[in-house]
Amino acid sequence: MTILGPESVAGSTRVPATTLTEFSTQMFQVAGLSAPNAATAAGVLINADLRGVWSHGVIRLPMYIQRLQNKVANSKPNIQTQQVAHSAVSVDGDHGLGLVVAPAAMSATIKLAKQTGIAVAGVKNSGHFGAASYYLQQAIDADCIGLVFTNASKALPPWGAMAPFFGTSPFGFAAPTYPGEVFMLDMAMSRIARGKLKFAAQRGEQIPLGFALDTKGKPTTDGSAAFEGIMLPFGEHKGAAMSWMMDILGGVFTGAAFGGDVANPFKRFDVTQGAGHTFIAIRADLFEPLTVFKDRMSELLKRVKNLPKAHGVDEILSPGEPENRKALLNLQQGVPLTRDVIESLNSAAQRLGLAQSVL
Image (cartoon, rainbow, N blue to C red; front, side, top):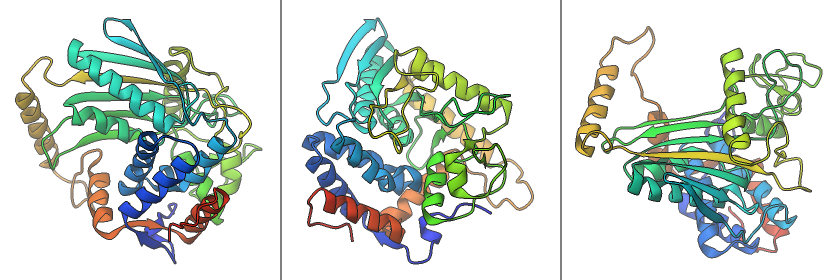
């Protein structure tokens, strides 16, 4: 049993990506973002939807809008970037949306890496930044290797503990390739993205056993009980240890909130989030010419794909390849949205006083 994607839910509708982009951009602008920041924030969400990462797409738009309306996310952040070392910048997001702060921080990281070969940015006073893949794409578009670390609101227990403390905190890594090839890893520390539990709960869907515990520490297949309860890490103690590492790199290291202090964006509409991120960009031509690097990446991908296939496997795919294929399909056919998501988006638009609806 898996949590159904929107294209598999009865009554879902495909909406052109351009329509979703225009709708989301207008929503963000009416909520107070500048036109450039609104376009950036919408772009992060639509990128996730196109890649099939629906749990981090426009399904979350009403949450971001409410945070702006409640003024716990700064609609006009004064993002401060300070070079603190030869190859390092500190970024203070001024409690803006992570969808605005994180793209600016990765841009600053890439700009410095182009000069120094490798650069790191530590980001504080940010918020939930959506899918890490957007920032990885920024890096590879600039012919850089990209690494993304973030912390998040508490959802996972440290190994041996019985209470949520660390976030599901996605890790990201990507390397430049030739067109048509990809290596992009974007993974949470949990067995499943927490956002999928949130929306399984919203739809009254069951989840696979072993993904989460309820508030009493008992295994559950109830999406609502799981979202309110305890997420389980991938790889048991290994995933739990990595979530700890993410809190160090995203929180302790950067000056952001840490140790369970990052506010839950869906539940705490009365406080800023205080999330932190670390971005690293490395010029891919640091040790070899760029064409040689990409040739070697191509050769590595080819060698892996030519390996004997396990029973029942038709094709060996690289990390990011399924998402890239999904993006091509969704660009052609439209982004699938379930009826409850469409109703949620339209309701959020009405609360903003917009006559426009997404569908």
